[in-house]
Length: 292
Image (cartoon, rainbow, N blue to C red; front, side, top):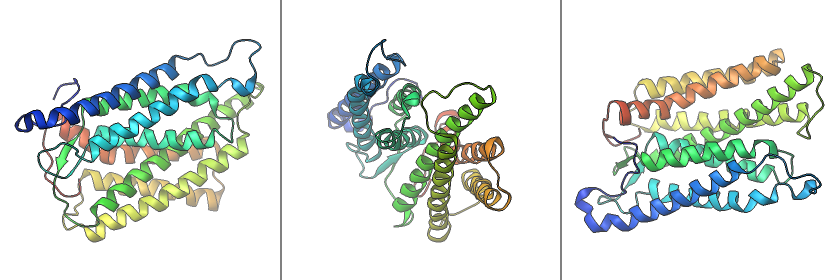
């Protein structure tokens, strides 16, 4: 599989796949350009510019890129234009959807909280995710092994997004702690205690959603087995649940807590995105249907 943007239909689809392929390319390119524009904007405004107007230069391009990325994800995941009706998914759309969900929360939070310092970093991450999903749009999954499979996928993606937001807040919390240790002045970000509270709220929400996803996959999927994906997902759930228990019982906080969060999030990232990357890119094995 090459790193060039992949067509949306197969060769047999012919001209039927040209329209959807062009739509996916246009949405992906628009999102990519918007994110690159935001990423290239200077972090600070010119001298004398009002603080309230500093983020406005990149707000419109970011919103446009966000909408275009959603359109690209819809065209890709829905399988629009495929010869055989059904969904399409893979490691790259999963990563792109995760970043899109993190951006969605960021766009809401930044209306009320000072989070402008991460705007450029998120834009570059989103640009990389869009490019990756354009190059590897996933594989067709015409059949679902269970009627609960779509809900299982949605809950799994939602947990990815929630843990991604938790990791973002944890990174901001670590940076704030480092500044305090070096006795540097705060740079207008959120207070440390508020960052910590938000981090664990998103962790708790993510654990709840992931628990439902695992229960659905275990209880309603005939092909459930202890493969790499499921084993890593359960290990990630154990680590993140252990983090919540450790915080509640032992008062874990600071770097000890964020290490557990990073470890659990990494296990979850490997569980689906990592396993699918190995199958789709390294081993180049097709999907077999069912819950993958």
